[in-house]
Length: 327
Length: 295
Image 1: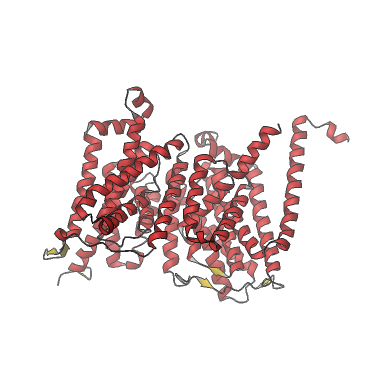
Image 2: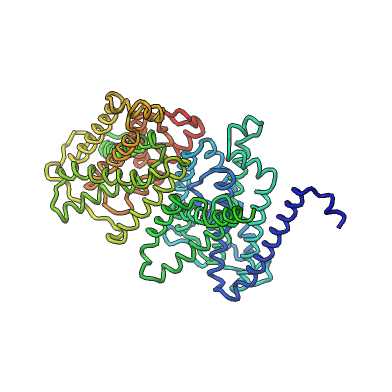
């Protein structure tokens, strides 16, 4: 192997790391493709939608250090726009409906982002929460959202006008593809030079400013990207469940996505996926058990425990362990 | 009948009064948030839950222990404030050295626990609390009818707000508090027991929320979710006013209540959202907030 001899040890290590990472992605994709054979596809689709939502949120909190307490607004906006478009224009194919919902979330994300990045830290969280609550009231009152009842019977339609999505397995593979695309966008963003600058801003904002970076522009792009991907998750979820409702716009949903990310591991790529899987499973399991009414109390307890003694999250702790033992 | 921009004077003044009452609650709650934030640097997401606990303790005290309104007004803030001190001592202290965002997340978790537990026992529909007999009825001021209880709420809230301002700005304890806000390490070096001061401050802020809860019990339906929706509006009020100034918090709270009341008269559809719209306007024109000094 002539080429490897010219590599420095550092480059060699980097190359090995990349190979390992690509191998891991390949294994995970195969698992994703085989999963519906073993597990109920509708449940898997729910997990994937929330996993994408949490990954989008994590892009903002984990890599830009911005805690948004209003991400439910983007999930709901994506969902409602997709739902309305698909319900009122029967000729529209689902992928176009999802595209429209995502664009709506991008537009809203730009508006929110411009306002929210004018304040830092704690205030940023409060501003996003207040803006999302405003959207909640808007969705309650707007004539086209179905108010408290929500939008029901959104048709799943036929993908590209060819493949019927009423079949759960077809639907699953479409959702899986959407998730992989969304995840790939986040993965590329995080590992790009842009992502490095974002991390620099997270670590030390004044320093990034003094190095000449337009910090506000970087933050805004991250916010819009995160909002758009959250909207994509909401749009896809609407197509899967043929439903868009106020639950998605409620501040509890903004809290849930924070919990998923925190539990799985803030600032890790796979953390939000693990967290979403756990929280959705927990909710599903609890809903069928006598503890069904205690879901929100149990989520609150997990929140408290996570913040007190488990701040790196599951994936974060695993990474720490791996680093300690294999270095 | 006198009309103001096409609205009868009585209706106009009535809505304005309702707005002012809401404003008094915004003022009390944002004041408590500001006091806690000053020393602990935590945005207390459990503040709405503490307000709700205050109202619930009042209701349950009457139903099960026969405690009347006046006893509750004195006792409930002490009990809930005590609960706050326990929470600070056992939980919040452990994360004091971390990023302030963790404080927000932790208190959010606590809020979920309190709210969820009470929903399990009492459901989400509200119960009503009788107006205390001494404050029943009302007066006709000629231009409007003023229910005595509402007048009492306004006076009590303002007295407590001004009292808090007095304690913080004009007493020795308040001087410690302000100094602790600026530089806790130096305070500790001067021999002031800062951890104790922090526990007391959190307890006091929580007691203010519980006091607001007692005042609210006869006015609004007492339900486990009464705090959370109110708290989000209070957050917007805090963003508008900034948390740097006590009087600023009080004035902003009252003003936002009035604006909400006015909106109810002329464009009821926007009454829920008008405070958020004001927040957007403030963010565009004066990002640091009306009374804020950006850190």
